[in-house]
Length: 454
Image (cartoon, rainbow, N blue to C red; front, side, top):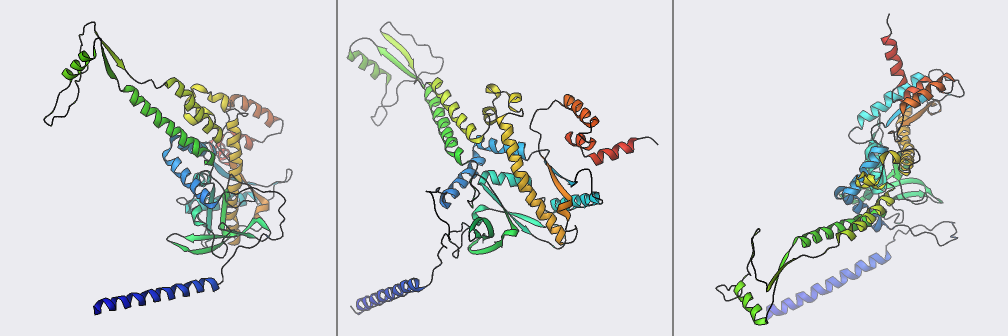
């Protein structure tokens, strides 16, 4: 009895202690200051505005896009085509002096050679951490790509990719989406808030000069991008479900039922059914008679045998599947034969002409990423200027030129004749003609001089 009373008193004591701790914690939360998002400043809302994509939905789209490019063959093909035609073979950087009229500044060749050497050193140092293909692939797949720079005093800087999910809002800036901008200008980033893998509560503030963001699919006044595959995810899932349904229908169609129709009274049909069946030791009815492949059945005129199978209307399903594929191709901006790798409904030569929609799309992507890659180049050259490897007026004397994969079908025999006439007329230089053929003019000139006798 005494032990029961002691247990009751201990229970009451624990309950009172729990209530006291709960009240203290609530009072602490109520009195402690909390960070709130800053107001919108002096901006005046004139219209209803647009509803931005929430962080939860953006993360869901990003995860679905990553899974699609890994598992869905059409999504994988879209990403592979973009990489091949935008950042594939032929993508390279070259430096050239900035000349006004026909005057090329003295010493420009030395600056170009120094810039080439610095860029090659950067590529060697980051060959396992950065590539143009991965930069573009992350942008298309995730909708945005973050690259962080780590300056070095002994050579070219190092860069690392930062996954978008590690750029998050902090308790001090809950509405920042991980990007702190100027007070009255959302398009001017000041810092990026990067959480640490394994310790998401530890958030590092990275200066905007040390982080590069490439985003697509949104307006310039939106902080975060959205995946290129966002409008394609539902059609891709729908096409997979359609294929699964058709495969099940094919299995059902392959199941053939033997229907034996007997003329006569119901008692005669019951007698034949009893003869075809058997009973096991438990007394329950077992399986009916089975006919092996190749069996020859001999019946009288009173028995009719028919082989039945379900009608799946496969002819109606084919246009439906093609309609889904066409919607995916339209959302990706690619012709149908590029999406499906089936050229029976298209012509490659007529598609890859200068006026083709696919060519215009690839050219626009090349132009966009030329600007993004130039930002990386300016990072590298600015770091070299700070280390006094290049003069401060370097950007005013040397320009960068990007060469991307050739898209348009070309008849070089006719183009060469036109180039020769342009060179004779003084419109084109011989160096430009060499560049059009994909060779370096300096290397070609040196080889020609070495081949001359004596």
